[in-house]
Amino acid sequence: MNLQKMFEMQKELDDRIIREKGLEGQDLLPNTYVALITELGEFANEGRWFKHWSNIQEPKQPEYNWMTYRDDLEWKPEYGYKSYPLLEEYADCLHFFLSIALKKGWKEELNVSEEAIVDFKEAGFDGGLSGVFVEMQWSLLNSRMLKDEESKKQHFHIAWGLFLAIGVVGFGFTPEQIEKAYMEKNAVNHKRQQEGY
Image (cartoon, one colour):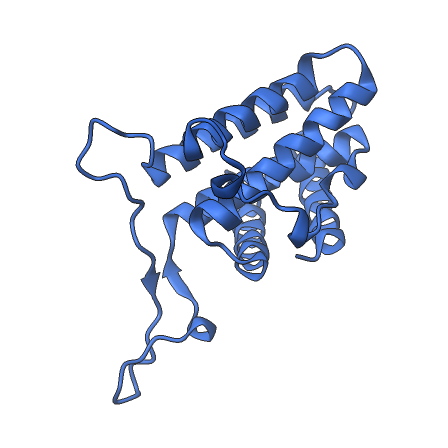
């Protein structure tokens, strides 16, 4: 993932929203945390893994773009997704992680190598994917609520690392898929601003 490019794109979107909505000088950080927590809930709802009461505990499978003019109708990754709701929700969360990092000056806290992404299945996290999700939420809230700035940064870094682990290990997203989904959703968010969303 090209985080630097994504930070630039997020800053451009955030600046546009602030300018066009007349929000200059306002502390938007609490709203951004609420937005991230809300989007994480939407991601979980789409993922369905925690719904032990339901017969459907898997997310909707992606709908692919097919090359209709070909005889074999084979799907290949380069043809892309027509719709992948789980990845789209993940990209929504990513927007708010980036916004918080920008607002707090915590860009370095999002530097996590692919090798450092925790395989929570092997690490024996209590509660599997739900346990990792709750741990991520706890760290995210600590990054907001603790008094010590260094502790806040550490918890944000942990929350981000667990968020990546959920996407990469839990659902098999590749860094390339995540980046592409972010880019596509960023374009949608700009279009929404243009249309008076």
